[in-house]
Length: 211
Image (cartoon, rainbow, N blue to C red; front, side, top):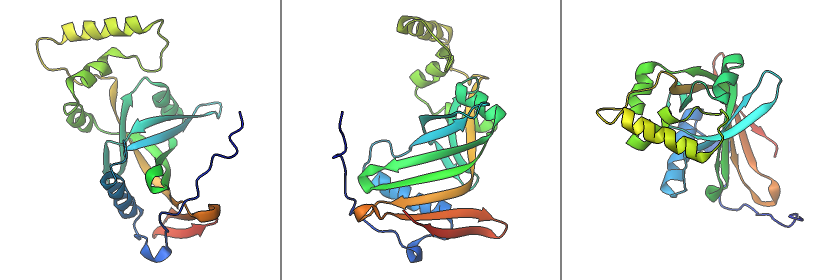
């Protein structure tokens, strides 16, 4: 399969040092709002990378569900592959790709579990099906067929038919605490604009990177 001719020449926008927010979180919020305003599908989707004990990187797409000055929050099963990897190595990265705006943002840092109270506050906002799904799936473990998963879901529906679906003890949130950001704006002729924020003792240092 020859796909060498698949290419786009990015021309939508530029990124200049003078227009950057000195706070990378502020810059991220500006771009995120523009992604929302552009009605891009799932603007909060992010590729999350972790590393196993053998040094093998793993990636998957998860959804950003909370953002504040402490970091970027996502939710998962605490027995999942990524959770086991975080227990051995808390370093991780996330990547937001907004192709409609010819932009991406990559963020490096460390992850930590959020409090049970924070996880519960989010869990009760989920649709009932999603709450039941958290109880149904032993995330990342092998299963013989889809029908077994469907049967487990019906079992959970019966189990919790008389009241609220509680927060599972094995499910909750992680927060990625950033130490580095990179903002990437596609430009013509592959001469993209890239700016890196690195956290230092006196705040964030900003440098332009070559494409």
